[in-house]
Image 1: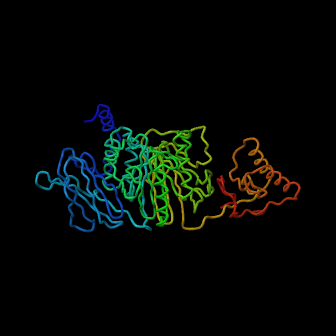
Image 2: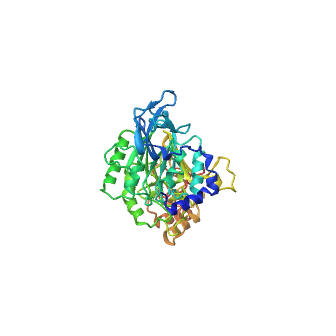
Image 3: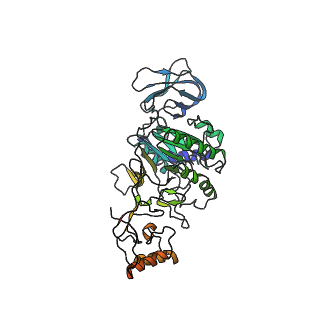
Length: 508
């Protein structure tokens, strides 16, 4: 029975304009199924389909390869909760399924049709697209707007990541299985556990990731898709050095690297870096202290989190400093890990904390959105996309509003940073303004230098000190000091420390 509060919320958005537009996804006409069917534990050779019936029934799953007309039947299950495991599948292959009721002695299709299909995970070298959403489970018009946008993506995503807080309502059917029902019928859902999400008992009865390795649970697990390895963590459990979760993380990433995973991606709820509402949050600080060194140790490519209700993208980060930021937005073999916060799935959005240190943050947008990923052997391309219906005054030729985009590439060597030695303001020439800019940076809290490496006029390295502006002034007015290369022309500096360099100093 629904509680009065839940009924009120349900009635509210059943009569809202967003709910009236809901048929944009093909509706599932299965009145005797209360939840699902939905796909879980999808891998290269296996899958699971789950469904919950309104009344106790004896049901079974039948399935077949998309190219084969012959159906295969799995053994029936009884009760209201049903779970079917399919094995010995082929990688990167499409399969169809139907849910059959055999309670009354005959076969009645409870759920079947074109959207009841899934595609198994592909082998390394295969390109794919995926989606990620966070902080969504509130059954608002914004959540349904994001959902409709996901339904319209072409090609459809291979799987659906969630960065946590998928259930603010303490009712998974209202927050997850209702809103995303048509998507989850054919797209495997890989959630991470957030601070507003249900207890272990409720979670374990709903979500079944592909668990197989020691240390994996329903909220701590990993999976391979194409050339990428995804590791999902639970920031509601201990995230401290020496904890079982951290031991699993190191072991898991080590195994992935040993078998040649091209890309390493982490997914969890609490961000390591944010300039939003959780900038000073103790849990975030402790999570950063434990996980950030591991991202450096294993050269993790991408970290996807939520918790802050906005979109954020960091510079590539290693050792707590920005690296290769000057390459933005296409990073070729970057020397750091890119971190994104995707927490705009439906809940009210959060703005920036005015006291936060934004030196590691490249993009901050407080809007509802989802993250779309395209992954190949050569690159990961990500887009933060927002529904057109939430941007009615803007042209929408792509059927989505692209809030931000980035690319991480591995198909060519990292390019060297280019600048003119001593050109602190990146104007293309040396003058007294460069010396003044460094002096202000050192002594009066002036604006940050856009590329400290270029301001290192004597080539002595970091940190910058008084010798740098003095050296430059001697060069300009006495002529007895000449900056080392790259000088007198703007050029490459392969050995330069690019920490904190937000843009290169040479014209492209």
